[in-house]
Amino acid sequence: MRELLLLRHAKSAWDVPGLDDHARDLAPRGKKAAKKMGALLAEKDLLPDLVLCSTAKRAVRTLELVAEQLPRPLEVRCLDALYLASEEAMLKLVRAQDDAVRRLMLVGHDPGFHRLALELVGAADAEAIRTGLVQKFPTGALAHLALPIAHWAEIAPGKARLVAFYKPRELD
Image (cartoon, rainbow, N blue to C red; front, top):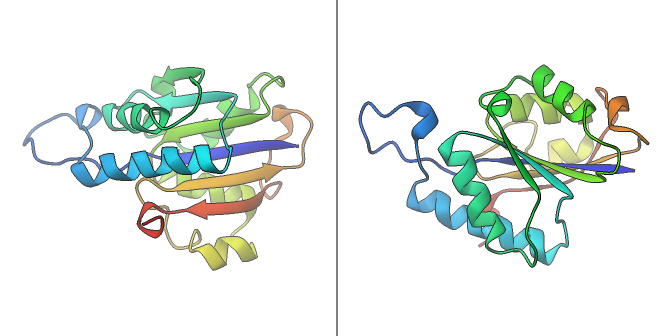
């Protein structure tokens, strides 16, 4: 059994006109949401063995704020390939992971995360419908997927079960 955590970056700031998209930081609301997600990961004992994070400032900052809430440091790799990555690109990255990693977390962007989650669990998944994942993958949200596979290379559409879908606004 493997677990995949998909953490979309928290709400970003748009207050600097002309700033490159890759360089945008978090808005105050995003900073608060990231800390909530970190506390949730600690409370639920959902610490990943490895984190693959987009190099976009808003993704890196989200992860930094999440990590501040955790009881131990995380192994993190920041990858340009995750910046606005498609679901196919993310699947390729996940399939290439070492099998010593049991719980993997990706920190990145939409629409790729939404598409990836729905592709892995299926749009007809009852939990995806119940939690609203079918409609939207909000900023700062975390999808927890269980994969009944022995090797990351086996990850495929329809193979995952949505364990939970956490949204920052529901954690107040």
